[in-house]
Amino acid sequence: MPQLDPAVFAPQIFWLAIVFAVLYLIMYYSVVPKVSDVLEKRQNRIANDLEEAEKLQREAEEARIAYEKALQEARANATATIASRREAIKLEVEAKYNELSQKLNAEADEAADRVRAAKEKALDDVRAVSADLCKDILSRVAKLELDDAAVSKTVEGKLAMAVKEKANG
Image (cartoon, rainbow, N blue to C red):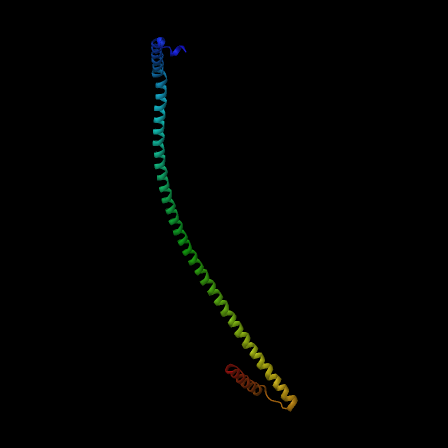
C-alpha cells in the first residue's frame, strides 16, 4: 500500500494540512456563519415566542379575572332582580287575593241573605199551608169552623216549639 510507505508521509501530511486548512477556511467563512445565523435567529425566535406566550398568559389571566368578576356581578344582579321580582309578585298576589276574598265574602253575604230570605219565605209558606191544612182537617174531621187567626196562632206556636227542639237536640 503506497499510503503506508514512510517515504511519502511528508507530502501526504503537507497536502493533508493544506486540504484541512482550505476546508477549515471554507467552513469558517461560509458554513459556520450560516449555521450561527440560523442558531441565533432560532434562539431569538424562541425568546420572542416565550415573551409573547408570557404576555398572552398574563392577558388571559386578566381576562379570566375580569370574566369571573363580571360573572359574580351578573349573579348578584340576577339574585337581586329575582328577589325584587318575587317580592313584587308576592305583593301583587296578596292584593289579588284580598280583592278576590272581599268579592267572595260579599257574594257569600249576598247568598246568605238570599238563603235567609228564601228560608223565611219558605217558613211563611209552610205556616200558611199548615194553617190552611189544619183548618181544612178540622172542618172535615171535627166539623169545626175556626177563624184563621186562631189556627195561625196555634200553628205558629207548634212550629216554634219544633224549631227549639231541633236546635237543642
